[in-house]
Amino acid sequence: MRIVSFNANGLRSAASKGFFDWFAGHGADVLCVQETKAQEHQLADAAFLPAGYKAWFRDATTKKGYSGVAIYARREPDALRTALGWDAFDEEGRYLEARFGNLSVVSMYVPSGSSGELRQGFKFDVMRWLEPILQQWLHSGRDYVLCGDWNIVRSELDIRNWKSNQKNSGCLPQERDWLNGLCREGTGWVDAYRALHAEGQDYTWWSNRGAARAKNVGWRIDYQFVTPSLRDKLRACAITPAPRFSDHAPFTVDYDVQP
Image (cartoon, rainbow, N blue to C red; front, side, top):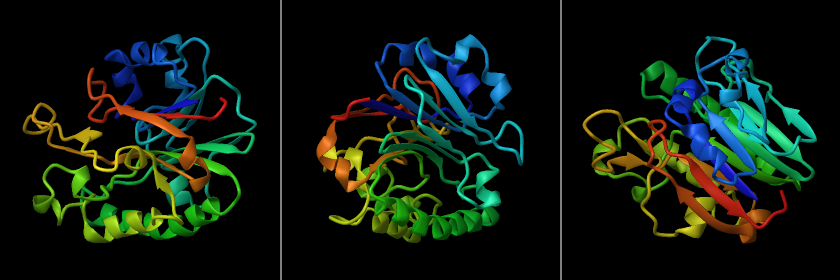
């Protein structure tokens, strides 16, 4: 089974840059998108639906053209979930879960705090609120693949400019401690990329400023976190920085699981 996670930073924009042409030839079974930045009716055209796939969306209702997540799949899910129970989070279009038998594939978009103290405070609130939900999923007996942009790096391996970003959202010690706590070795969520590349230094996001992408001054903030039951099913992964469809790169993981 091949699963792709991609923050499109506007799915219509990414499509205009050839994303769906690339995706159609990529052989994926499931695609999880974050930041669709559109309402579902704006993505109904065939240009946004590759042949052989169906799509499901969770749009932001608080502000049109903001946030939004989607899941594309070859197979119809047995169930679809669109809310976790807190309107402040749910209505920003940040969670969508597709259930295929005992496997749940989630498209998740954790808020950024880079715009200022108010949003950073909301991000901390989201982190505290999400933790028991993620722990419940971890021990539910279901297999989970959590795809998405978490807006947090885990370690020095995941960001080019480590020292200069210690006071910046996404690299704050309390953010990293929270995420690494969720991924506690042996008992927590498994970071698919890190499990396959223990010392890898690849990035999934680059600022649009200062030729960051050309200089590879990036951050790894897009993940596929899996339940420990799937650790031995991880086969390969790839980050695709070129062609450029967004300020994020698609992140693909292959699993030894029947789609």
